[in-house]
Image (cartoon, rainbow, N blue to C red; front, side, top):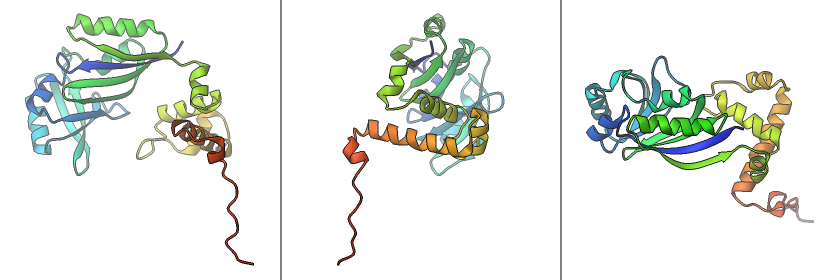
Length: 225
């Protein structure tokens, strides 16, 4: 049964430990797509000069290149040394998928998806064997109850997961609505309607909106008699 695990992981013992020591104000966020042979990581906090100076000195990083940049954060393709603990590769080797990853104050927070819960245990043991102490913050199964708790039908849930996996919500988008509809084998119109209903269900659920609030009566005409 597919499960989601949120894991806290100290940077100490991983490829970025030295980087956080060199620039403690650094924050890091994983780009959804792995770039070339390394990982796409958004780095922010200190200046670009400080970031690149630290990247050049970290022994666990075998190479890096700037992919994109904004005013206060920069996307780098970072390649770790083969002998270092790479949390992303460790997840992949346990047949998992990294849904999101961010780090600040020397601590990683990973959200991963695995086919079986046993893979989380194996991943935990793998980190411990490398003297990295993980903390399982949350672990839950993706059952039908998960859909209903958010107000989603199973198809709406599957569609949103597919949209995330194919980069539909990335900026810029990595897949068009037509390409996503082809992938799901449904029409462009059906996909559009399903996504709108899913958005509405999520917003209504998360904001605790009542049915009356979600379906307000038509506004009275402003025209005077």
